[in-house]
Each structure stands twice: as structure tokens, then as C-alpha cells.
Image 1 (cartoon, helix red, strand yellow):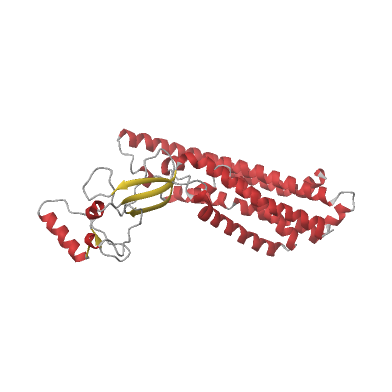
Image 2 (cartoon, rainbow, N blue to C red; image 1 turned 45 degrees about the vertical axis):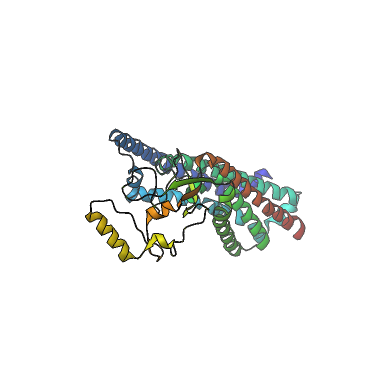
Length: 354
């Protein structure tokens, strides 16, 4: 049965191996190039004591930016592509061609036939996805160090062990759909919908709750103040040594209630005309004007007044030290979601078609 499996699917596996090799040929030299450029830029700005703007300048434009985007989306779409390439036709095509009946009349039980097919397919795709994920994680080291962004939703999905778990989920879901519907195009449409729903809903609604966020607070400031107070129109970033993921940020009062920009405290609000007059008068007298801002169609707001009334920044975030914890939790989640699809495939083959 193992030999028959190899003979039946060796072309697919060889094509997959070629795609992995092609990705490696692309990833290794470009990854080394980006790391070298980053190291040179880091050394140059460190000598000049001016590294604050490096993340806004490096790899943001031209071919470099395009390569970053292409690499990210290639790995992001890998689970769906492998599910389509390996999973949809694994059982469905057997039914259409009638080759399953031939195998079942040659002394091969349905259970063994299905177990070998699922086992080899999942093993090969997981191994290939693991190689691609390892290359992708290594490739992103320059971007991770520069932007501290590996916790951001799209970057999170193309690094670490998560691409492997996603691929296993996509492949077993495709196998189940192919066995159930026996129509490749219909199964393909449903598979795409399932993957889109899962890959949007999990990062949006589940990932933020894997661990209670840390809370960072910072005071408000008026323009010209050089301490660590912060303007209410520019969310502060907690001091950190690695990637963070900000789940929520707002200007809140002492009770934690977010500032209503459309209807702020009356004593701290001005019309735009009043704000302009106050700023003009303070500038003429040689003083530093308070900062005003109008947001969401509301009035101008006096920052210092907000500060005196107890308003401050509150930022809830996940820090770099939780990265692998989140990777493991989400990978286990996708593997758990794979179990019902495997069970459904066995039920369909062993019971429905018995």
C-alpha cells in the first residue's frame, strides 16, 4: 500500500519538493542581503547616534518593499494552496475515477487504505511546510529586528510553527470536503470560505485573549514638554526590548473611561476659533502654546486641562516574551480543529460508502 501510494502521488510530491527548493533559492540570498543591509545601516546610524528613523527608511520603498510583501503573502497562502494541491483530490478523485473500488477489492481494507493516504499526505505536507516556515522565520530576522513586528497579525502567521499547524488544518479539511462532496470545484469553494473565516476570526477574536494583556499608562503633555508625558493624539509605545502587540489604546480618566472626543469635558473644550486665538496670543507673548486638537468632529481640546482632570494614556498590549506561548496555543488550536475533519473523513469512507 505504501508503494502504491508513492506510485500514485510521486509527481505531486516531486513538484512540491521543487517548489520548496525554489523558495530556498529565493529566500537564502535575499535573506542574507537584507540582513547585511540592515547590519550596515545599523552600524552607520549607531556611529551617528541617529537610529530613531531607521525603521521608517529601510526596506519601505521600491523593490525591497515589494519583495517583503511577496514573501509574506506567499507563505500566508501556502496552507490554502497545499490544501488544494494535496487534499481536495486525495479521496474525491479516487471516487470519480473508481480507483478506490480497485484498492478495496485487492485485500486492502478501507481503514488501511484511508489511513495510509491521510498519514503520508499529512506527513509530507507538514514536513514541507516546516521547511518553508523555518526558512521564512530565518528570512524575516531583519524585518523583525528593524520593525519589531513579528507579533503583528500577518507577520505572526508566516513565522514560527503556526504555518505548519495551519497547513495540516487546511489539508485535512480539504480531504474531508473532497470525500464528502466528491466534486472538486464545489469543495474548493467551501474550503476557501472556511480558511478565510478561520484565518480572519482567530487572530481577531481569539488571539487577543490567549493571555491577559499587560497595561501601560502614561501622562498627557503639552507641546514643548520633553519628559515622558505624551500627547493625546499620538499613542505611546511601552518601553520594550522586542516586538509588542497593542490590543487597545485610549485616553482615559481616573476611572478608566475613555475620553469622548465628540463631547469632551466642557471646561477643557474650545471652538476652533477660540483655540486659534489662544495659540496666537501665547505665541505673541513668547510662551509655549498649549496643544489643541479636534477629532471625530468634536471641539478643540486643551491638553493641560485634561491632564489636570486626571486623563492619561492607557495602552493594553502583549509583549515579546509571550510570542512563543501564543504560537503554541494557536498551533494547538488549529490541530484540535483538524480532528473533526479527520473523524468526518473516516466516517464518510467507512460508514457512508460501505
